[in-house]
Image 1 (cartoon, rainbow, N blue to C red):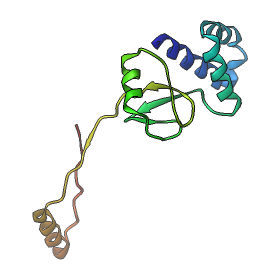
Image 2 (image 1 turned 90 degrees about the horizontal axis):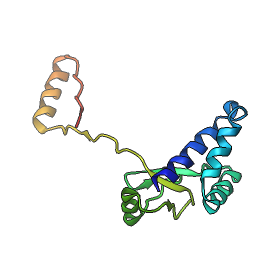
Image 3 (image 1 turned 180 degrees about the horizontal axis):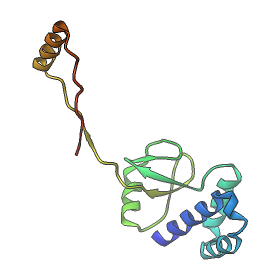
Image 4 (image 1 turned 90 degrees about the vertical axis):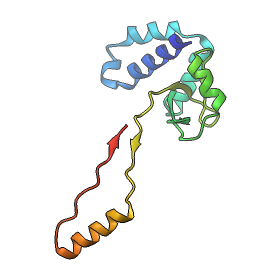
Length: 133
């Protein structure tokens, strides 16, 4: 199934580049022939409505419609057993790589007292560092 999603992504990227689409007609046709008819028909219906045919899933959210995707859908995508369609927007789904987590530094009461003392003394306030985990 990963090959099917890869072909759909390739078709979407080739078709979205309008300047290169004229010269890539043979490549587009080759990719279209590699796709099953029902999948291609559904993709074409989405494109005819002005939507993209595929949407990535990040943090259990469809990036096409920004609605939450069920956990079972995400697990099926992780296994690569079957293709999945978003229940909300109807786009074909694929997994996007997770973004690195960002650690937020909490301000402590002692730090607040120190900043208040610095303000009163006329010193400039220093920034708070954020670390990427």
